[in-house]
Length: 174
Ligand code: 5GP
Image 1 (cartoon, rainbow, N blue to C red):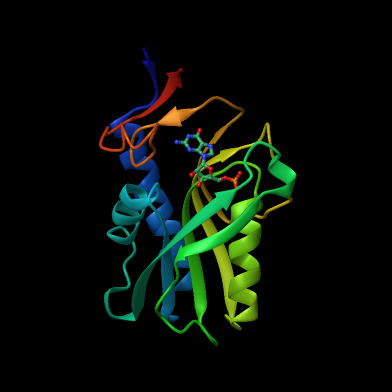
Image 2: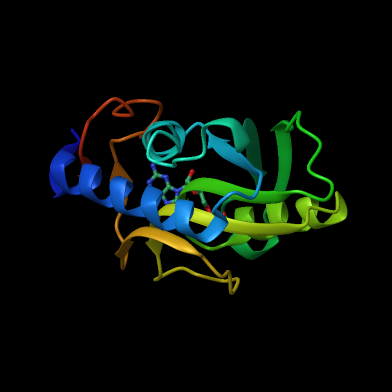
């Protein structure tokens, strides 16, 4: 049986996404911006974040889905697209919206891909930065919350596709 312990409440998440939306608006001001949601885990964070960015006409939104293979040996994991972005990012500012940066391998892969496609700039907004297992040094420009370790579910994050709909973020004791 899975037991859940609340780590960040719905209220805390609302306050943090509002603050991050303001921060992002101030950084990009009137510049055009492509915001990419990393499916599936970031879908709620993304939807709350974009509604707090005051840039109605200048935003393009897109979605990507990535799969990783060989998870038992993390450093040799291979990342690939299962759904690629559709917007042309060449010469544009891009903001990646991710749920958790854990080892950093997924973000390292996506950053490389966006650089090959000649994005003008790429920044990362992550709901959670989990430090304990970090393998790649990834600069996260906008962080929702820092955590050390533990397996989290809720607010988009799943365990075997469950718990994504929880309004809070919980630690799952599996
Ligand atoms: P990384 O490539 O940084 O190791 O992995 C990032 C991905 O692993 C995240 O996008 C997320 O899908 C998954 N992940 C890492 N930690 C957790 C966690 O605590 N809970 C859930 N549900 N997924 C996690």
